[in-house]
Each structure stands twice: as C-alpha cells, then as structure tokens.
Length: 554
Image 1 (cartoon, rainbow, N blue to C red):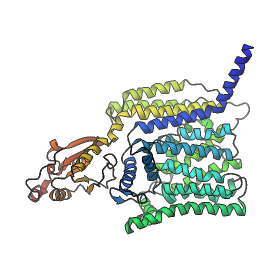
Image 2: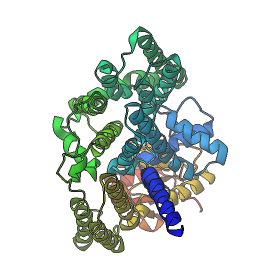
Image 3: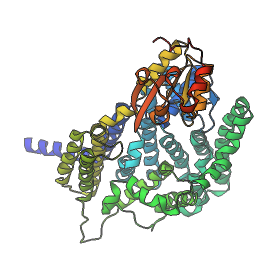
Image 4: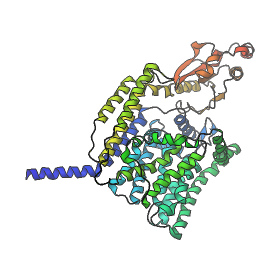
C-alpha cells in the first residue's frame, strides 16, 4: 500500500515535471535577464538618451512632442517614452522603472510567440519550446535587459501577427491585430513593414485557411487602424514641432536615412556571420538546426526569417539590432526541429561539447586580455574572479548528461544563460562603473542650482546627463575648436564646460580645477571656463575675458 502510494506520488511528480519543465526554464531565463537589467547602470549613449528624452517630456509636460536637450527629437516615435512616463506617474520618477520595460516586453513577446506556435498546430509541450529557445538566444537575452526599442517592437509585431495565423480573420481579430500594429509603428515607425510586409504578401503560402473576401476586408481594417494610430500622433507632433521637425519626422525618417545608409554601406553578406553569433547557443548544437520546410505550418517561420533578412541585406546601412524581429522566427524553426522525431535506429548527439568549450574560451580570452590589455579591456575593467567563474561553469556544464531532446534543450538554454549572467555581472562588473553617468550628472545638477551656464564640448550632444542630473535646462553645445571655447569664456566667464578628455585635454591650463571621471573608453572632464587655455588664441582671448571673472563657488 505504502509502495503503491509512493509510486503514484512519483508518477505525479514526473508528470508535473514533464508538463511544466519548459515553463520553469522560461521563468528562470527571464529572471536572469531581469537581474542583468536591474544590476547595471543605464548605458550611454543610447539608454541614457532615451531616458533623458522621456525625462524632458515629463518635466516640460510635453506628452506629444519628444524633446532632447530642449529641442524636438524626431529620430524615434514616442511609445517607449510614453511607457517610461506611465511608470513614473505610478511610482514617481526613478531609474528602475525604465529598466523594467524591456524585460516586460520580452515576456509579452514570448507569450505571443507561444500563441503563434499553438495556432500553427503544434502541441502545447512543443510550443513551449519556442519562447524558451527565443529567451536563450544571446542577442534576445542581452537586449531583454536593455532600454532599447527592439524588444518592444518585436513584442508589438508578434501581437499583430498572432491573430492572422489561423482560423477566420474576424473583425475582432483584425482590431486586435491593428492595435498591436499601431503600437509597433509607434515603437519604431514604418520600418515595421520590412518584417511584416513579406508575411502579409505571402499569406496564401503559409496560412492553412484562405482569408476569403471578408478576411481581406478585415485585413485592410487592421492595416488602416495601425496606420491611423501612427498618424494620430505624427501629424499633431509635426504641427507642434515646427517646420524643421515636421520635415525630419515625415521625410527624414525614410528618404534621408536611406541616403545616409547608402553613404555608410556594408556588404550584402554582413548579417550572416552575426546571425550565427546572435543565435548562440543554438548555432553550436546540431539537433536544433532547422530543416527546409516540408509542411505548410513550417512556411511562416521561413518566410518570416528569409524575406526580411534579404531586404535588410540589400539595404546598405546595417545594424545588428535590426535583426531582432527575426529571432522569433528562428525560435519557431528551432522548436519545430526539436519536436521532430529522429530517424528510427539513430540517436541524436544530445550532449553538446561545443557550447561549454565556447564559454571556457571566453573566460580564457578574458584572462589573456587582463594579462596583456587591448584598448579598454584590461585588468582594470575585467574581473579575474569572473573569468575564473566562467571557466568553472564551463567545466560543470561539460559534465552534464541529458536524457531527451526536450530536457537537453532546457539544460542547454539554462547553461548558456547562466554563462551570460556570469560574464555580464561578474566578469564585466568593473567595466560598468565607467558607464555610470550618475556622478557627473550630480555635479551638473549642482551647477544648475547655482545658475552656472554649462556647455558640452564635442560632437552632437545626446542628452547623456539630463536624466542623471534631473536637469531642467538644456546644455549649451560647442565643438572642440579653441575659438568656440574662447567665445564661450568671453560671453560667460563664470561658465563651465564638460566633454571627453580627448576633446578638452589640450585646452585645459589648470588641471587642479578639473573634475575628472572615468567614462567609457577614456575620461570625462568638467572644468570652469577660466581654467582653459587656447594656444595661439590665448592672448587675444585673455583680452576679451573680464579680469575679475572667477569660477563659481561649489
């Protein structure tokens, strides 16, 4: 009797484990991305720029018009900024809420991906492998903790695609798809259609049930709703921002950016080696390598991956994160392959040696860089303890044995993501302090409270310090020409300047007055204008500056 009860209890535990194993793995993977997001500072220049745009909108009560350093900001639509401000309205202005947006968007994206897999006809146990495969990918895992637009865009795109996958496209489904499409357009603009366009144009090839006349009308409703949501923001924003902003927003986002892309061309094949790296660890495990489509349900993922990849490859301006919306398609292909039975009489090599070898190689490379140093990667920016921990984890990972494909995929995903966590939070821990702009932000806040004018010296200022210092006034901007610095000192003798050491080093005459901070690959300098010298212009500049000008008291 006791033995029977114990056996029954064991069977129930095994049944629960087989049913919920993938969900537990997904939760652990997501939790690791969340920890990474919260543990590091907002990174210049992208993350600090976006949070500063949201801060300036918040402070100026400019809900409709994005602002950067006091000027209208036309580079990105407002969805991310609205989400940041929504959290601030609930929890107050803080730095942790913006860090949560991408992890939450990643969670929504994985939910949509599971629904897509189910609507394609895959059983639940197999469909859960798709979000697990996605969350384990190196690029998706890293960007799930970054304050960027790409995970948010992918989540909205998946929400727009999910209602189109199966069954009759009812008006309700069309409205849901259109709302998600509108959010995608408000996240990244018309670039959404590079990914969505090939999927919509090939609907008859991958959809099990034709749309029919009513379905096509509902699809038009969905597209119209999404575009209407974008225009409902863009047209009033263009009117509020003025002529130059309207031109940048309505014209510069497409034609001008395409011309700039042509001026910074990369070869057509440039994405291919990156795609192999960004899909790590799956690229190093042959059992999950996709196979060519033989069934209708496999076609969507291939079209979703190959069509946009071809378009992105033909556009000469290329960035790695442009591929983010394609990774869910790759996750579907990996899920399909993992759920495919092997040929009778054969055994797949479930135990992966290449993944722990790659992890160990990364740790060894870090130790070599600490010993010899290359650029900013030295002992000062890398932790030997973290590198050794990475090698130790690779050794533990090497010894793992897996009983089946599903279990192997889960263990591989967890092992790779633990390695990423060790690398980013232990091995690279000393590096993050160089990307923390909190200290210079506090100094600029003090200068602002003292009504001291401050100018940024260097290339286009990206509002790096506006949120860090909760600044309420924009910084002046100067190039690193000594004549420009001389004119600034003449007009504002009590002013200060901030810039990279490489831009200001030759102009600083009194280094004792300079505040120096480690910053990215060099140093950041905040210095009173009276401490500057101007080479051959020094004599003429000194004649312009009042003799009683002194640096402000701190």
